Image (cartoon, one colour):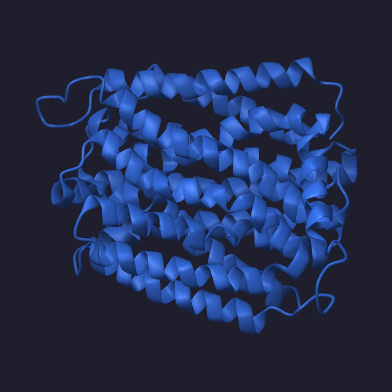
Length: 406
């Protein structure tokens, strides 16, 4: 039964993350074919985050009302449609529409899984199973690097998205027919007023807001950089070839897979054997994430290939600690609110990620292109430093409000 629940949702999240980061690899082709500047590239890629975020609050209500199986299966059909639109898009506007449909279609992939796991697994195991789910996303990020680059030898970026459209439709079918129902119908919180009341309970919770800012800025930074700007940085600042960029992104994705597993296991063991709450473990990891970003901004590791790989792997590894607050927050509220708790924090993450991914491009465009046609190093430094500053503000807020117990 556990595998019937886990495998279909893991496949959906695999595809969701592949969509999220694939533009980091195909960006040169999009720029060449569609004539995009940094701001337009950022806006195009970030459209995924905007529709993803817009779906989160109604998604939380729907998940808590009707269960994750039917909701995610239906939304993935829109994801498949978005991939098809992206594949044949004749202009930038159509690309944005396709990308937006993809974001909407995969908006339930993580939250539906988290909701399902709350329904099927004991709460003391949630950090571990959530970590395994995040590993599936990491594998999707990994597949979006060298495997996609290898596919480009046989097809183009349009062909890649036609394949993704077919796989997304297959994923919808698997979830609908493999995942069992739980409880056989609607959840007790059947009235819309009660559902909205649950959302109000979350957003008026002092404990929620003590944790949210640091978590949100940390995850938004990771999503916006890994999903797009890591690739151009490796090309423009580290002066790597296209093949080398894909190889480095493969290692970055591998570190993400490892991080999701390791942090989930650490949080599980720390809580079980030492009574340490998930937020304690997460705080350590997110603090290390700040240090790594400072190293990237100051270019302490941009001279030697081995140092570049290690630093960006550390970036990905420590960033994944920022997912632990999801499990921490879900334990603070009744199980019936689990979907809305997770989608509430996810709403904030993806709104900021949308703004950040576009804003990073806008900041980079403030500097003239280099003689080779790339983006200026100073632009990357300014943009990444802005995101680092926001995370430090979140950390300061969390420390000030340290009385919360998670």
